[in-house]
Image: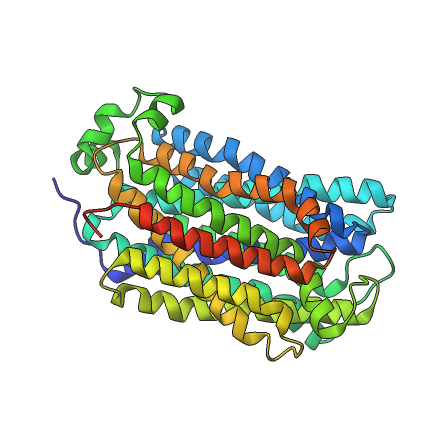
Length: 433
């Protein structure tokens, strides 16, 4: 039996919690390197702090997908994992920005921050994954692109809010500087408010979304149900469609590029525009706030570009062009000495980000029709997000040394990687897109 068409608002409710989850994700990606630099981390070791989060993601996401495939409760099969992940994220968001305020030594504060970052990234991904699974479970093939476009819009809307928070709280009067080794109040309160919004959004989703009970699920997903308990992860990977692996190659280049952005872009903007990478200076903290605004501009550009993506007749062309534009944006960052000129490269980066959010899951979920184990496969596919970040984090210090220690030059490295991702799109074959 074919899955029924869903109204716009049902598609919206399936993904609305993504708004709160993405606020948390934006606060993490936009402020974690700033927090570690404030705590006293050396730039050459900065990328190492990003290793544990994707490593945990590689372990947790397939586990969440597999367990949720086999879970049936009165609240559904995916939503319980969403709620647990969100609750964990809220707790960690209240702890992480206080790492420098607990009276610990610099080394202990950094260790505390690394553990908190690992737990935060794990819980955010645990909360994020069920939304992708819900679309795979309940949305028919015809509406999938629309459903993931809605997710992309909510992702970017949440990103705008999360990225702007530190600038906004500074504007209304909270302190943007603090004693050495202490995170400013503008950042701390950004995490507090983001945590509150996250839990409210997840509660809304829990109330509004009713997953199909087992009998109805079997009607709409008969092949998946027959195979649900029959295979382990290695078997699933061995039997995965080739599109799974080819999209994974594109993902490798893309997520490596964005890992370097999250790691080095605050220092890159501060170095290029303000001429300093001293985290104790007011200029550096101002640069960090402005980087949040640039991230928000990237997200707005991503929203606009996501609306244009369906107008491309060829999805592969849309994917590749978007990544090339993003790569150009990265490469332009070191050549923009004015903070307002920085808007241009971040708008271009937003084009690449829009495609990264929407296109991979459209290709992969369509390729997985009839394979079963949708949750497990999407959990395993998350490794194509996590593994590149681990590799990039391990290589970050060496690459930074090779480019002369200039974080701004690492943005050119990121641009090259994104263009390599665009070239890899040519390997994807799909008869449905």
